[in-house]
Image (cartoon, rainbow over all chains, first blue to last red; front, side, top):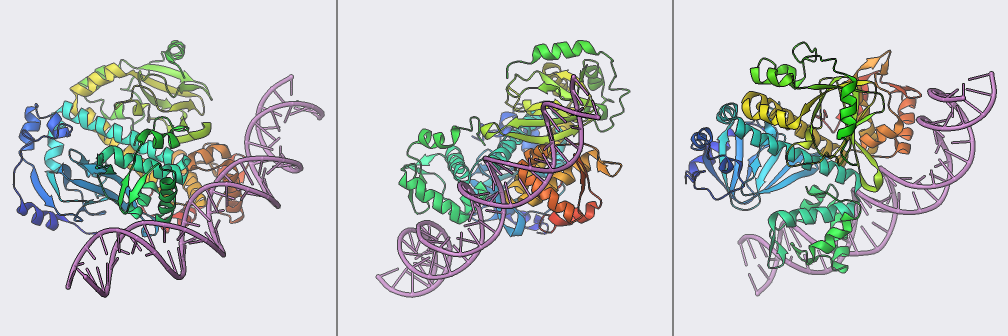
Length: 250
Length: 250
DNA sequence: AAAAAAGGCTGCATAAATGCAGCCTTTTCA
DNA sequence: TGAAAAGGCTGCATTTATGCAGCCTTTTTT
């Protein structure tokens, strides 16, 4: 739970592959979107690339906030330790997404942990430099503000879903979320998660997820072979929750 | 659920008392904090004062977003319609706070409703003018960004609380939240809410709140006379949840 | 002050969710 | 390839939460 600065130092050395934001292909990345700005362009050269192996943790809950990560390539799980040490997954992220932004605001310490779900490359920006760029470029700041505004909307949609949907609905919602974000590969969701991880996202227990998944299988709403889970008909599955829940899109 | 523009037009006429942000006493208000900036100062003259009587609704869920409200004086309840028409209270707000900011981001329509809990005066800023000011003044935008970042942290703390605390803990958490925000008056919380409203905030039912309140009364953790609820010893009550929940401060 | 309405309370039946325990299946690694 | 480990599955007992119904109390209205 202490500073993970040393860790990051080590990781940094491993790679300076130096993919510039200029030539980066993540069109949805906030940096890329604002690269036309001189301030952002200059700032983008200050980034450090960090390689993480599958399973490696690069943010520790409770460690001081030093900067911001963008995912250049890979998949990440963001979680925090809840009551009784129960793990709560806040979200999953893929290339182009920001990690560690919750450390802004008044917080001095990360309120979440982040771990790579597969080999992942991160772009790291120091907090000081970022703050400088933000105070200079209102348009860039405005974009980041909009990002936060949208994250807030999503988070509140989640409050609504957790407090008013049944466990079954929440599990379905989780399946749809992961499927939407990572897409399908050979008919299966392009990310393998354990039942426990689904539970930690849906806010329930492993057993409950298992039970519900096996029912969904029998109803032919999902297919599952071990950790591989597929959704043959997204619309059909969506219908299971959308009856009372129109605009849920976490 | 349709546009409430006409409504607002009507309300506007009622008052042009014209309290300038310059002389306003809400030191915590985002406008006031940034009033040193010429851009913000100029912008602040564009505000309209709106008077709302107790019980009056000034934002309707689903109506198009036209602007932003700040509370000059009074108390407000922010809520949305959940599953089965069940009301979900998102938060309570008092003077200096922003209402309707969730309408920024990608949203074109308000995702929440807002109603005055007592006679309330609002400062209204049009969205267009605000956007202009934001794009001009990076420091102002940065402040609003931080505000969103903090709101996000709070919202996620709420996700955690709802998904991992028991109903009893959530009710206690709600009591502490309302007490913290509105303070005490003559030994009672300075805001009278119905059991139903406590339930809609805590994400449970009216009966559950009633049951838990009467237990808490027997345990001398709260006092209650009708709608008046008091917390004799905040620390003691806090202890009921803080055992497994250290940093919850929604 | 009396009547009406709104809000609050409680017991009971039911439903939903959980935790445990034992067993089965898939994956990993030597 | 075979053993060990990790992950997945299911029935059962228990806990937690809910909804209903009837009654009581407080507040508001006339």
